[in-house]
Amino acid sequence: MGLGVVASGAPCVTDAMMLSAARAFAGNSPALKNSSASLLPPLTDIRRVAAEIATAVGMEAQKEGVAPKLAEDELSQQARTTQWTPAYLAFESPQDVTQILTQDSGSKSAESKPSAKLQKR
Image (cartoon, rainbow, N blue to C red):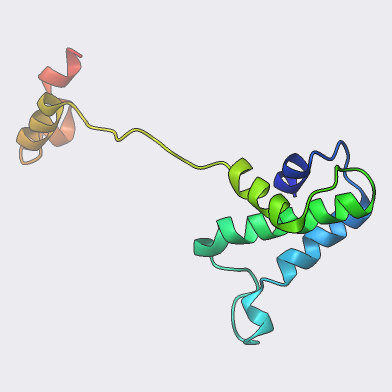
């Protein structure tokens, strides 16, 4: 819903936009094809479904006159480029901490109290 508002540039949310989001979301339910399937789409499809919902919301915002006019394909592209992409730096633990933990893992004293080397840090 929020992605559609941001991508379309709508300054407000109308009831029709909410209904449009709900319909787009419902249209992606696996239960439509198989009554014993999940009601919600799989998480692997979340980015595609979110962009589809955003496009539906943006198109409705245009119909309601609260967003600038864009072609559907332009709005869809705008939603995809506006979508947040998680990008994190890889975490690498320091070598010495890994070695300390590996060395202490087999000793009984490591289970009862932290390593003296670790306490200094």
